[in-house]
Length: 138
Image (cartoon, rainbow, N blue to C red; front, side, top):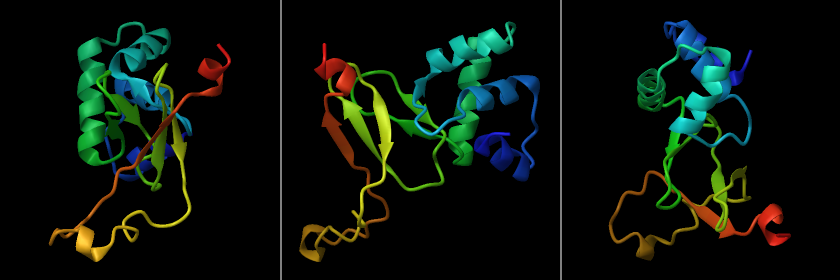
């Protein structure tokens, strides 16, 4: 059983066939699918699942804090099931591929007090950009 499915079961989330399929599609370490990609994969497992059900389920998962909504550029939002392990993203500037990365150090602690301008900083989002090996070799 996937980590996401286990977390959802632990929360007592009602596991319908549609919800289970969406959670299964999102399973993996470097999964960053758009809603349409989730739907396309879900249909292969459960042909009757609707696009609206996928969007609604993704919205519920984001609200629960079990899936992160990732916007790295002007492209479609992507959904990241790695919501409980702190990480940053590495994004290909050409194809949009996204990888989870775990840099050493604490980016929140790296911001000097005089650069916080009185803010109480509670979260940090860092996006590294570059060109992936597939695009670099093209």
